[in-house]
Each structure stands twice: as C-alpha cells, then as structure tokens.
Image 1 (tube, rainbow, N blue to C red):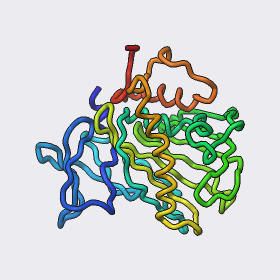
Image 2 (cartoon, rainbow, N blue to C red):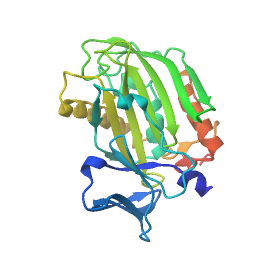
Image 3 (cartoon, rainbow, N blue to C red):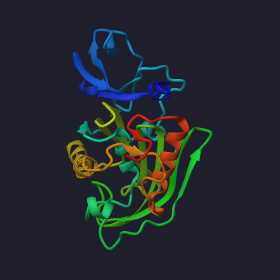
Length: 278
C-alpha cells in the first residue's frame, strides 16, 4: 500500500537554512530541496515539482497526493512564545522507532538521568490513551512524572504533566508543564523525515515560554536530550518497529506505544515497520 505512505506530508528542511539546492532522500527516493527566485521548491529525481507547505519553521513535501492539509499546532501562534529551530540529527533507525521513543516516558530516569528523570522516581502513573476518531490522531493525556529539570528554564525538580499527540505517522507533539507560566503548556515536537526504512533525519522544534534562556541555550539543551536518545535508538533490535503485538511484551507504561502501533496498522502505514517476527 504505497499510497498509504506517499500521501502524507514530510519535513525536508529548515526554512532558515534553505539555500540553492540540496539533495536528500525521502522514502528511499532522491529529491532536491532548495530556494530560488520564485521561492522554495522540492523536485523528485525526474524533475517533477512536488507540493510544498511552509509551517513550523520547516519545509514540508509529499511524493503523493495528500487528502488532508498538514496538521496545525495552534499554540505556535500564541504571542510571547519562543519558536525554536533545533536543527536536525541523522539517526540509523526506523523513522517509526524515532517517534515511538519520543512517546516513551519510562526511559527518562535511565537515559536522561537527573534531567528528565531520576531514580528512585521510576514509576509511570496510570494515564489515558485514545485514538481520536474525529481527527484520526493518537492522544495520551494525564501523564505525570517527576523531573529534576523539566526544561532549560526550570529551577529544581517538579512533577511534570504531559500530553502526547501523534497527528501523523512520522510526527509527534508533546505538551508539557511550563515552569515559568503555570497553567500554560510548553510545546516540543519531533518531525521525522524517513530517508529509508532504517535511516531518518530528525527535526525537533519547540514553541516555549522562556524569557531567561538564550536561543542558543534552548537549542543546546534540546540537542543534548536527543543525543542521549540517539545511542539507544541506533542499538534497538529489530531495527524496524514491530507491529505484531506478539513480538514484544508491553507494560502499563507502554500504552501510548501500543496505541501508536495499532493506529499505524489501521491506516496501513508500514514503511519502517516489521510485520512478522524475524
């Protein structure tokens, strides 16, 4: 079902970094991305112009015919937020593995020790997960976890509340407690460009309330967090994300991952997935 994969929007570059022409891969196929006198563009290997959308500081494209617009994040338009282009990291893993890792809160104390988590605070409290039929998205709400440093602007440990949203197969959005503004949400996203089924380009992006940190400090903090994830991602076996429920044994903390995998199967998105045991 190649249409189920092609007919989505994918990030392929930072708008602020587009100059001339750069070649890259999308779903195993070569494309050219760049800027000219007429604006930004994406072309396939045959020179055909692909559709483009400029949003969240990134250029998006699709090799197919998307039936819906690229998702929105209303909080990104709120005055006073810092919109942070984190850059990109190339990772040797399935694009779906990268998204699932972003959804996994249980690894915080062990991978992001003394920052996003710490022992003995390892328990993941019960939370809610559902696939919202009206928008066809996966949501996890009422996620709470103790964090020694929830954000670059945080001072001291707090119990952080999270909401996770999966609006597209290779994109995830995290809403979390905003230390400087109680009652508001910081927004952290992971936009993933599937280079191949086992290689991806990861583009984190954030919309934060933070009047204390410089842009460089916010970028550095998020890059540090993701680089801690990178070694884990590149050593996962199997490399592709298993969609057969019998291939891995989930726990209560994995409810979001289970819903994500079930949703991928339902929409027929299998690029970067392993369907049967090796």
